[in-house]
Image (tube, rainbow, N blue to C red; front, top):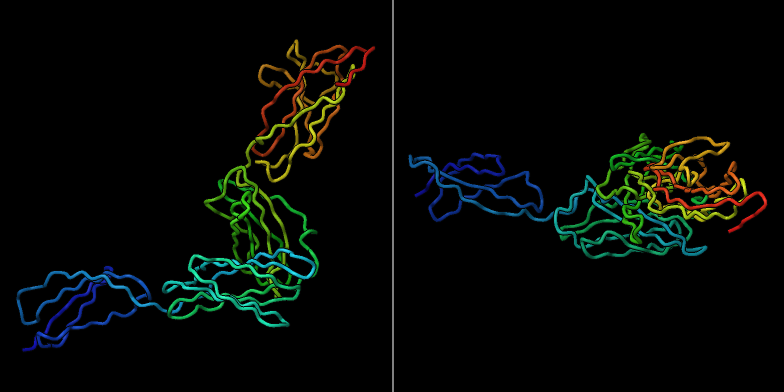
Length: 386
């Protein structure tokens, strides 16, 4: 006796109705669902009722199924870092990540890498493991074409390709580093349009103070000349270096260098001030050496030098640019706008006078706290060098 049934299949709120021809009670009813994604887990529900019966629907039967693997779709996003080894050799580190168009469609088992020199024998290697995302290789001065494909049991992805230009000297040393500024955990970047470029690449280290760097990159088409870089790993007081490349026919060429902070902080290092000489009416201060490099929490834009008389807690210099209140002191302030100038001669002092002086470093985050040093000028008949 055959039984004609009407069934409903519920697949992630997509309800499919179907009626099947009658079969013997010992036979199996089958339905094919199309349009599913490869290597994806689904939890369909099925219920049925006999067309000739008034008993109504059966209970929902719950299933858990996973579709089979398929070859990866799309291509990886590939980038490289090139370091000089010697005059004739370069160390290339390849990096790759999934792009917005890439879909694994299964468990990635390995990556296939091919280095193809314009002249010579191709170099091929396989890198096992889905968690691997980089590979190092020593190459020569000539140009190379590189491709990376991801593989699972069902096949390989489209090749992700890039070109490495021939080595023609070290142009990077001739590029002047420019400052850029961030806000609210973001970095704003802009660059000049390069004739012949069909795209641009911006790279930076997510952990610039770590030896591992954690290289990041972002690619753009030729119509884009600016962007706001966002990352959850950006930290206040950390200087980030950005390198901007133009994508040419033979590969990527470095065009610009930028450096900046998402937020500048007050320098944690205070100037170490020394009074190197004192005369009856002047003194010479020196706070060299003082770091202005990437170890600072902000760009050093200059220094404020504060001078006050110890007894009166006031400043009565004959010639001074500005007088201001600093805590309990009324001080004279001298601003030095050159961060590389680390000395000053203060004139207009009184012979046999007692003074206190301080030097603070200024960044976009503010200035360091003032630590005063005592100084006693000699009389006109004396000379003193501490």
